[in-house]
Length: 326
Image 1 (tube, rainbow, N blue to C red):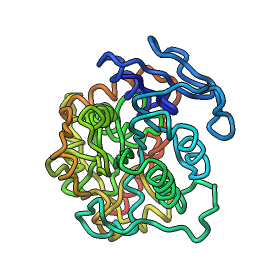
Image 2 (spheres, helix red, strand yellow):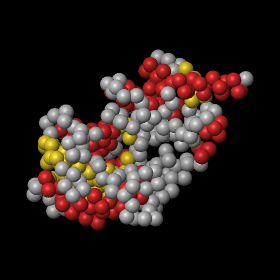
Image 3 (cartoon, rainbow, N blue to C red):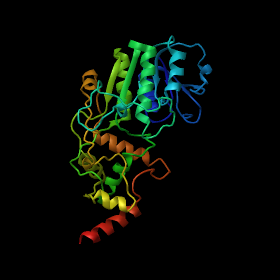
């Protein structure tokens, strides 16, 4: 198949491109040329999604995969330009589109976020989900039955520049006392970007359209499972230290990456229903492989972690909290 990937040079898009090439597809990536120079066996088409689509010419594609759509006005440009030039259009969305994640069991038909100002184009924590909803609508209105919407949860794995879960893999692998906002038995969900890539291409191969939540794994996973696996691989022991949230806030720690403590009344964030995706063929790499491969990849990155507690800060907090308890 001839595949056009909008984006395709970073994280999820890169994994989709690599998987598609492995499956023998002909792949072109449309991007601004800021990343991806090292992608082998792929055709690069340089341009800008916002008013710079002329570089796509009049070519036709079997599938278009949109990994970089965040602003509905811009997504609409891509849809209009490609509506008569592809068989299917896959849009990578997010479970953040749901209006209420307070209760476990979110399904694809649940109510969606709305924006006070649908014309807003500032992407932040307040607008991200609502903007993605409008992006989905643009795709669905243009492609109808040819539209495929995939809503991943937290995405992890090699190439993850956010470090949101990489921080925890690395932190648990150091062992010792570690500060966590979540107890070991609290739920967590994520999907390895490679599993997401495989699932997207599987859906297209099977001709399945519609909307699919895509997170995982298929069984209930807890923070303790993640910590145990990383510590086991490193051959270390660890101990969770969970100071009161107010105590941490007083010391400047408002949050830690990807953690939503149950006492903040958000039990649905990591309990999204994925039955539809599982029935359609979603499958998962072992947690051990995700942890190992992510840590090995992060060793090749020279920049420090973008999120989480620096070791010195954590040690300082641990010492103070230990003294306060004694």
